[in-house]
Image 1 (cartoon, rainbow, N blue to C red):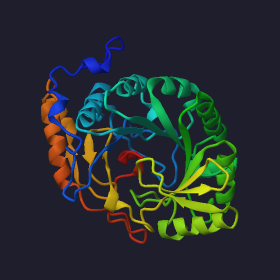
Image 2: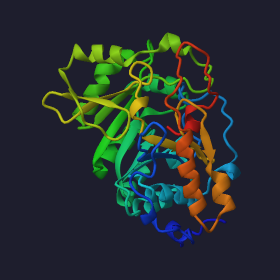
Image 3: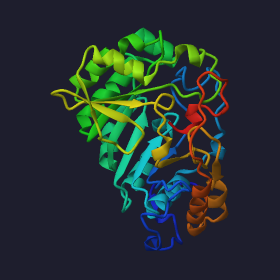
Length: 352
C-alpha cells in the first residue's frame, strides 16, 4: 500500500483492539525490567560516513525491504498502546527518509506518548527544525565529535561542519525543550577537544553526552582498542577544568549525568564498556527493515515486518508478537573492545 499524503497515518490501522486491555506493566522482560522506551530507525542511509559507525563502502538495505511509513506508525502506536511512553526516531540519518515528517506528525499526536525525540547528525536540521517542533518533538540529540572543520571532515569522511553547526543554531532557535550534543571520543582523534566541546555546549545552554565507541560492525578505519577512550578518562580530563557534581537526573536512556556549577548544562556519559548499564535497560530498537532488536549488543530479535504484513488490518497479532519478544530480551550485551566484532551489524543498521 502506497502512502497517500492526504490520509493521516493514524487512520490506516483499521482493526485495533482497545488499549485498555494492556497495562503499564505489559512490557516486562524475564529480568523484571519494564520496557517503556522504543527507538525507531526509519532508514539505514546517511549523508555522512562516520568512521566509528560504518565502513566507507556501505551496502544499504534495498528500499523495498524497509518498513513503510504507515508500518512504522503501526508499530509505534502498538508500543504506546502497551505502555511505552518515549519514542526516539533514529537512523542512519532519519531526516534523509522521504516523507518522514508525516511520521513525526502522526506519532506526535498519539495519546499516551509522553515524549517524542530525535537523534540526528544535524545536516538537515536548518530545513526541518521548526516543523519538527510543531510535530511534537521535544528533545533533539545532535552528533558533533569535533569543533574543527578538518577533523569533522576526517571523522565523517564526507561532512561539512558548517551544515551541522547551522542545524544546531536552527534547533536552538526553534525552542526545543532540550538540545544535546552527542560526542564519540577517540584517542588521538578528538580526545584533546573534550573541554572545548563542553564549553561549546555550555555557552549555548545545551547538554552534552560523551559516548564510548561501540564495537558494532567491521569499519576498517581504526583498531578500536587502540583508539578507545573511556568515560573515566573523559571525566578526569574535564575535572581539570570544571567542578562537576553527580546527579540522579535521567532522560530515560543510559547516560549518567553531572552538573556544572552555576550552569544549566548537564554533562552525560554513555559507557557500555566501563560502566555497564544493562541492569536497568528499559529500551528496545526497531530497525528500518522491521527487526525488533532486544539488545544493542546481541542478536536476539523478532521479525515484526512479517507480522505486520501478514495482518494488514489487525494490530492484535503485532501486539502479541511484541509481548512474546520480551521473553527473549537478554540480560546484557557482550561487548569486548579488544576482540573482533561479534556483531557484523553496523551502528547505522542498529538505529543509533
